[in-house]
Length: 335
Image (cartoon, rainbow, N blue to C red; front, side, top):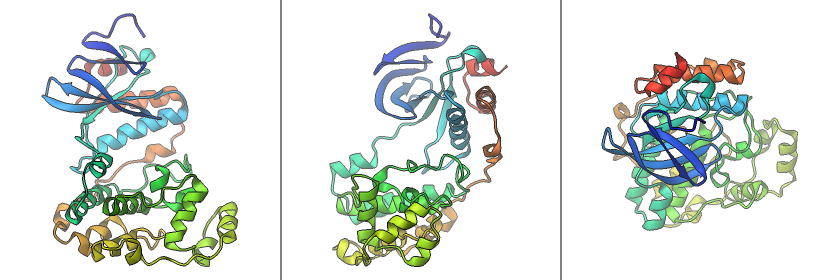
């Protein structure tokens, strides 16, 4: 890092991290951090909007990091849908390719997350209908195939444990898009009851809590599991019958209970899809097939490419350069 900020940028230290951003992004305020980066809210003086600025953590530390960084930008560029977060800007303070270490993404700032909403008020059934409808509408447009091949990086950390589909924890490598439907079912149940549905303390306890509701898997499903260890573990469990969902979600809208029963299914081939869920009677007042778009074709041929770190960085720089909103500095690092 040079001693002075890049022209047109300023530096600020936040939570022991140095941020270097264009002067248009003022009043940086930390709002969260995770394994892949930190996020600040900011005022965009060019547009007058409050935005979220994400600084990626070690984006080019390894080949896996570099490819993941490239994948995230490709997906954000591809998605244009009102129920999916949109990319507003992408920039780097680097003035040369050799200095290209930091990447920042700018998206819309959301006023609250579901956790805030659940904590602040008791939701009505109408609230739950509308919130879950929006989530499913966003999921439908994401159904263009998994964002990466199923044989790469498929660990048990694809989703937060409490909302994680059982096939992930059982290392069912060939899972499909309905992995997200399971998570939506967990969220919907929590919105209806105000309680986490499966608050497992670890992977084993998580699976036990799931199977207390769904029952133990039938033999045909166990036989389809590619993991010998997973099959042995499931077969070692005592038989558990499926619970009556109407008893578990006592007092809930019967149509909501029916939808949950179709979402929280162990067999991924029998689990309801996003498109099917949108057409469920529970969303009758919102469902409009003409206003639930499907995804544009998405080219993920890059997933099979084997590049080194510098080559992934170069691909990232090209991707930024081609973006219709880009920082002139970023254009310089590619040229």
